[in-house]
Image 1 (cartoon, rainbow, N blue to C red):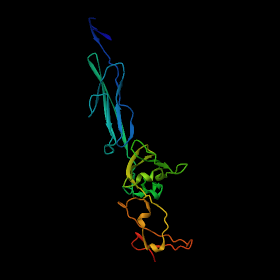
Image 2: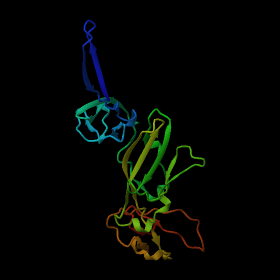
Image 3: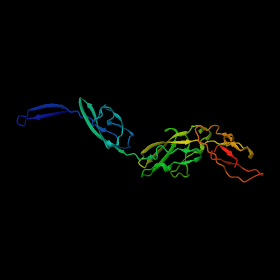
Image 4: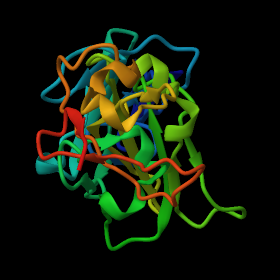
Length: 276
């Protein structure tokens, strides 16, 4: 506004006037946003603003730059972060500024792992496998998830083994087709473990699991006369058709005599019957 000052000489009552124009800028209030608490390696955002919002402002984040917002990946070794934000508004050729500070606290991730790595391979006939005994668990309360396949796409071979859930997970070996696991075509998969603690921080670890096919064995029945002397055992095999890549061992299961015929016994060669 315009202000007028009048000075009067008390002796002679002479007067002199002068004027001054006083311009008062709006009060600037900088806002760096709320303090945050995040997990290690998470990405956080800081964004500044000011009031009065109808006035244009120049921004500056100390040690970052002049942008309004920044995206930063957290590192617990730098926690807590402290960022100072400045807003500057120019009115009538005069600038007014204000500062505000925001703090970011970084929380640690729970420690989890598999043991051993990789998991011990199993044969198909071993059956379904409980996976929780192979987890090294953190000393914290939280929630678990275990799956296999892709890190973002579960294959469905693992299921919670108890209802209600008590933290046990079962790998369903029986969901595989043993006939497709022959000739070295083993089932290999990656198994993932995610644990989320009560702070809302989660960690992920993975290992590998291999299921080996159980050999498919099929024999045909044959009656052999005693006077034959010996008989090639391999001629009884239907499957496996070849012994390549496998070890074959014949075992005789004792049976009672039947029909007046004497059963033969296997010799140490394990490849033929010998009359004894």
